Length: 286
Image (cartoon, rainbow, N blue to C red; front, side, top):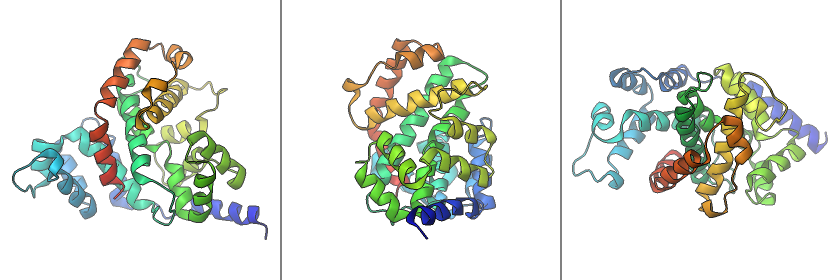
């Protein structure tokens, strides 16, 4: 059998990955509920001892400067972490636990999650300003976190192939996507769409991945896709500390009817929180 056929067979295994455990499904559902109470969130998170342990570890970390130990998740949320941070952390950890990447030596989990978190945060902040019922901020945020989930899935089933892809493409996003397409026949967005379908996540997230970087898409989700494209590329410059080299993204801003000043203000606010985001990304990546 040829190498291309071998890879095609391995890619097809994505459809056969185990379904998400019931606990993970309930956690993802809770994370996407904008009206969930702290008590309800604590109850759902308790389904995952690993998640609770990491949340308590984060709350007791030196970064937050706690003088005493917190052993109660509810208190950790109220006094230290906040519900918004917990939601972000919970979804990321669930995805990271389900898709193992340790066999791919060139993969940098901290960078991956830093980029995912910045993308998600930027998409959420812009969505809040747009006040568009077709782009709810919580959907924009989760879409940002899930945008490159296909890369994790590809690494799990083909770690050595992805290691070669990352090295050859020098970890540059556009090159990684093109190299994956060349070597595997699918890029991370197509693989991610298949994975989310297998995991039965809401259709909106599958559409975002399916249409990401497809300029001819004109469906109701077009503005959400455009928002994710803008957030994704801007996040690369933020995480790489190259905001001075960032292009204007004028066409994307015009497509969203969002001002350049508003965009730059969001860039500035996120950039000044980069240390916080990087610390969170390190914990998520283990």
